[in-house]
Structures are given as C-alpha cells and as structure tokens.
Picture (cartoon, rainbow, N blue to C red):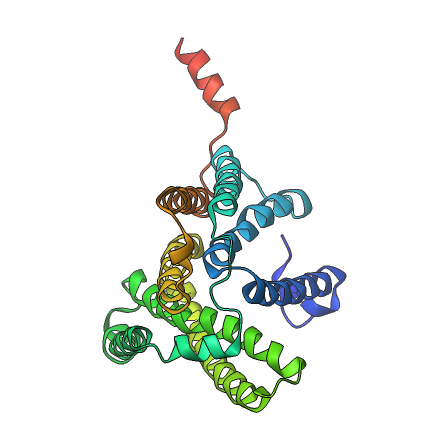
Length: 277
C-alpha cells in the first residue's frame, strides 16, 4: 500500500501518482467520448469494469490480496459485460442537436425531472441532516438521483459540440445548449462529490461502492430510457439478456467490494476438511 505521507501533498510528485492521475484523466475523456457514440444503456453498466480490472492490477502492483470471492466477482463482472454488449441496442436514437432539444422538452421527461428535483430537495434539506449519518441509502439516493442529470448532460454536450465543430447554421443555439448542459453537469458533479465524501466518512467504502453502483446505474438507465428512448430498439430477448447481464455484473461488484476483507481460500478449506476427516 502507498503510505499516507505519499498520498498527501507529495502524491502527485511520485511517478505512480502522476501516472495514475494521467490514466484517470484519459479514462474520463474516453468515457465522455463513449457517451457521444454509444447508447447510454451500454456505457453506464460497463463502467463497472474498472472495479475488477482495478482489483486485479492492485493485486499485482500493490500486492493487495484478492481472495477467491474477489476472483469470482471479477469473472462474473466480465461475463455480465459480454452479455450486455451482445444484447445492447444496435442503433442510436438521438444523433443531432435538433433531436436532443425535442427530447429535452418532452413533457414526460420534464415531469420526470420535476419529480427528481422534488426528491432531491426533500433529501438534501430535510432527510439528510437528520438521517444521513445513520442510513446509507440517504447519501446514495442523493448521488444516484443526480446521475439523472450527469449522464444525459454529458451525452447532450457531446451532441451539441458536434454542431459547434462543424459550424452548422444552428451552432449559436448549440453553444447556448452546450453552456446550459455544462452548468447542469458541473453543479451535479460538485454536489455528488460532496455527498460521496460525507458517505465515505460515515460508512464502509466497500459497501457504499457496491450499493452506489447498482442504484446509480439503475436510475441513470431510467433517465436515459425516458429521455433518449433507447429501449424502443430492444426486443424482449435482448431486454432479458441485458437485465441478466446487469444483474451478473452487480453480483460481481458486490463480491469484489463487500467481501474483499473476507479471509477465505480453497487451500485452507481443503485443510479443514482433511482435519475433519
């Protein structure tokens, strides 16, 4: 493990810290580009692949223990991701700024956003001060509901940026839309960071990470389904396949995160069985 002194002010001065920061920046850029080119129902669940790959790299580079349940979780996460890719929508439902503006003003999506805003106000100003430090679902709900703004805004910025780069006649409107979505994205990320930090101060990071992934992904997929109607291109078989894939990935994440401190290996189990015999 890296010492606390290294993780402090000198962290970025080490080659490991610098490489990690650059890798995270490149990953976020790739994530942003993915939202502009691939359906959200595929990109968001696949974000979980960072957990198994991070665990595998940590076991080799940082010599962290990866028990049998963690290895099983990595296998399940990868298998579920393959199922998601196979059954994901094959076409993009929103490809232009005009289509995006039409979707954003859809009464169904506007009504959904009003409900989300009302729930956020209730959680942030009334429920979180009283029950946040004792109930993990309060902070998770706030961060996950904000995902209803984060991911669609990211996708919208990418579509608006395409019109700006190509100097289309509607580029002025695209600039305005891009600025509005940037403001929404920035505010939602800032609030998310605040409540994620609060949650990590009160609860175990492994439990928080596992539950947060499932709830956040579910609400993002709901918001994207209402806004972009990506599920309209998915048949019953593909829908069930994606549901099974997402469930498999979620179980894998729980095994990796929640049980990573659980001391369990097949060697000790075999020894115990031999002694019992």
